[in-house]
Image (cartoon, rainbow, N blue to C red; front, top):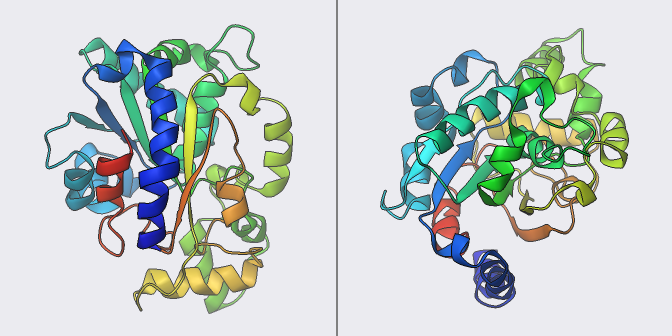
Length: 291
C-alpha cells in the first residue's frame, strides 16, 4: 500500500499539486499553516487543545506532518457530539481567531466528521450559498485564507454505521457497539446515508466549493488486536459496509466528493489508525506530499 502511495505521490499527486501551485500563485509560496480538525467524539475527550493533540491525533502525527515542527500548526477542539453544522460554527470561531493572529495559507488536515465540518464551511462561504455564514460564522473569511483540505476517512456520503446506530439496543454486544459509535448523539444522527443524500444534492454540492478537498479512504480493519480494532471489525460486519472500509466509513463514501480536489489515496489503516502516524506513516505522507 505504501509503495502504491509513493507511486501516486511522485506522479499523479505531483501533477495535482503543480496545478494547485499554478492556480494559487503567490498564495502557495506564502507561509503555510496546518490546521488539524478532529472528528466525532464523546465531547469530554476533545474539550481542550491538549486532549485533542495527545489523545486524538497524537504528538507524533503532528510532529511528522509539520516536518518536525518547522511548519506552523493549530489544533481545533470542539464538542463532537453536536450536529456537524453546529460544530462548523465552533470550528469557524477558532479558525477566524487563528487568521486574526496572523495565520494564512491554511491547509486543513481533517479526520472523519472533521472533513464533513470543513465541507459545510467551504460549501457555504459565498452569499449565494444555502447556509452562507451560518449563525453568524464567518465562513467567507476562512475560504479566503484556505489553500486546500486533506480529508482522512470522511463520511462524505454518510456511514452505514450511523444507519445501524439507531437500531442498536438490548444486549451486551450492542451496548458495547453503542458506546463505540454513540448512537444517541446528534452527530451520529446527522451522519446517516439518508441525510447525506439530501445534503449532497443541496447544501453540500461540490459546485458550491471553490477550494479543493483531497480525500483519503481507509481500507483495513485488523491493524492489530486492540479493543478499537475488534470493535471496528465487528461494526463493519454488522453494519454491512459495502466494498472496502475502515470499520466506520466505506471507501466509496470517503471518495464521494469530486472536483475541486478529489481522490488522493487509500491506506490500509483503519478508522482508529488513519488519524495517526503509527500503523502507517500518514503524517510523513502529509509532510512529503500534502503541501
